[in-house]
Amino acid sequence: MTDKHELVAPEAIVLDHEVARVEDRLRATLYEEGLDAILLCGTDLVGWLTGYFRYGSGATAALLQPGRPIRLLVPSFEVAIAERATSTRHVDVRPSTTSGFGMLADPVPDLRESILDLPDVAGYTRWAAVGASWLVGDESFGEVVDGSRHVDRLRLEKDPVERASIAHSTDLCWAAQEAVAAALDGPTSEIDLFTLARLTGERRHGQPVDFYADVVAGTATGDVGAPIAVPGPRMIEDGVGVIVDLVFGASGYWGDVTWTHVIGANDEVDSIRERLVGVMEATATELVPGKRCSEVYASMVQRIDEAVAGSDFPHHGGHGIGLTAYEAPFITPWDDTELTEGMVLAIEPGCYFPRRVGVRVERDYVVTARGGRELPGRPATMGTERGA
Image (cartoon, rainbow, N blue to C red; front, side, top):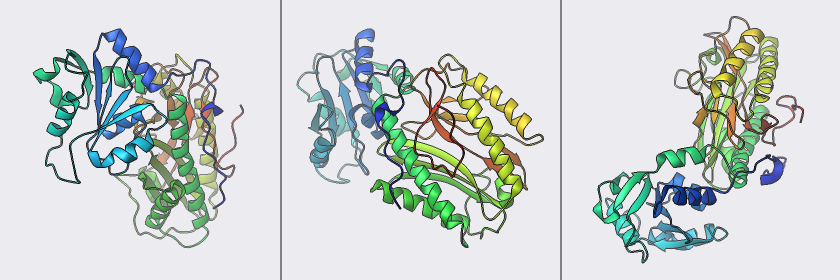
């Protein structure tokens, strides 16, 4: 496949108020809360701060302290690759004492001792920890507070590097959508398309990826997708719609796009899809700072009702994407979160007639003062471009 999907540069979508780097925002939290250190555990949060996302990584931790570089603790056999992966981040990589794969039934005590062995933490008395419940009540660490509320808030907005990483995963989704469209020219099944999509994304990325997908055809599209309708060996008949919802996670960040393809010709599916693209693009104009997610959802529901009378809309209207494929904020009636610049959301209107037909479309947008800006890379064959 020709390389038509370039990795989006961080400056491709310009914000009025650029989001500061993750490290800078966490350092501000250190001072505001009077903390001696913030400790993050778990591969997603460690990668969020350090940039170290590694397939098959062992127990890791990242320590942020005032006036010092980020400390990244990894098993000793990962040190060399961790140093290369974080060479542009000014990260101090430190080994834990784990000496081989699978040599410890429980790596937590080893990780704990490695943290306490750092030469400058002995006098710390107030820590914030996320993903490290084992610290709570451990008197060696003094007072340990739950840092989740700080991290959850900071994760809502994505800095330029994060946005570029999300754009890369979104690019994998679109490349796979093109491969699926090409495969529909001949006989194929849902599970064949599912497998092809993953293969396309992994080959494009050059490494293993995390992957999730709905690939359902014909009357099964009226059941939305998993867990009700899942890809199976059913051969796809001519003249039906195929909902292809692809979610790729590459190098720690996720992208999520959906397109409803048609094999052969189906005027009903084409017409509904065109109207839903209009709903999605109109909804994107509301992705501005200060708008509540619940308000965006209400507007989307009204637009769907007007566009496709009598259909069902039984799911959320969108969600945040970043370190996971489905994260805050959520385009739902219950989420009153106010949008802010730098949030990245997947917007996905759909309409369904159970046991007959369903259609869904989805794209990824950055919240800006001028409305949602779609991450670049979408093939022109999959919907009209929205005006700048």
